[in-house]
Length: 367
Ligand SMILES: Cc1cc2nc3c(=O)[nH]c(=O)nc-3n(C[C@H](O)[C@H](O)[C@H](O)COP(=O)(O)OP(=O)(O)OC[C@H]3O[C@@H](n4cnc5c(N)ncnc54)[C@H](O)[C@@H]3O)c2cc1C
Image (cartoon, rainbow, N blue to C red):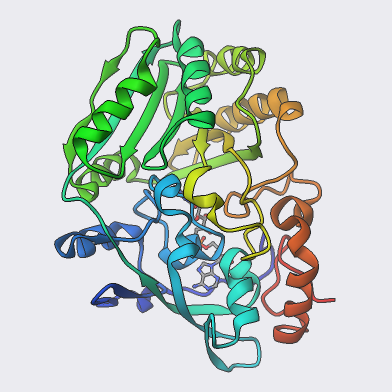
């Protein structure tokens, strides 16, 4: 995306820079998610963000921010109160609902095109000391039936406290569940979700959210690389499409590769597409093919596997893509990432960065 461009290292803007003040937290631009949840846990507070330790708070937030709490709390940008941005002319600008509101609007979904964000202030929300969280596993023979049932429940009945991601690998199908509410209520909802599904194994437990994330974090440490293709959908995947996914995941080169469905309704829909630069508010889920590998070599098979899976199911997906999972293979990226919000984004870009200093192959263009 940035051939011949400059990369600015913001890691020095991380030290000592998670500052909690009442129900707000200010985070430096170099802070990664690894440090955020343990810092917030003693306060019994949270804001929804990434589950991967090496991703920065700023980078994830500027594109929207999908998380294990999206259905209950919305996107990360929905909790952003204020940011400090260094713009193309060298000014240091504060943005919020009242300070430079147009730039604040653009930052929440297309932020990387407008300047260097050096710090962000978020509104915090109380979280139960323990959440029902963990995985449910179906074997590779039975997961299509399970996922048909689960996706129908998520589309039509699930309370917004139920956050769910489906991961489909060569070894079977996995539901990653976080119930953001009282544990007993969570158990009842999970029973309703799983009623009528085939035999499965459960590792759901009542545990602090930060602890659950650290178990997922553990899986992802190391030299992680990926080729990811994804698109939003408005309807659950059909049985035929799931059969195609099943065929492909059976041939995945390793257990690092997976197909995923991340549910996105609930609190994400509380805002309308024009309310922030993040336009994909009315979608049901994000569906993706993830080819991953560790270290510098070994990319060939995961890439061709993920590309093959994505191309097989692409006709059933929308042309709308998550801007934080960019791909040079997305043909009409401006429409795919920003849809009807793109003209307003260009107008703001022309005022803030008319020479396109913060430009890449897929950044908002000035008019
Ligand atoms: C392993 C992994 C897991 C992920 N999980 C999630 C997830 O759960 N939810 C989700 O929503 N996304 C997720 N993402 C996507 C992630 O949000 C984007 O890749 C994001 O751009 C990463 O930001 P970064 O700063 O960590 O990465 P970098 O590569 O350092 O930055 C990516 C780009 O973001 C911009 N950027 C970053 N920081 C700033 C800043 N301070 N000011 C201006 N521009 C900036 C720049 O254009 C930069 O080129 C994941 C990505 C990975 C690799």
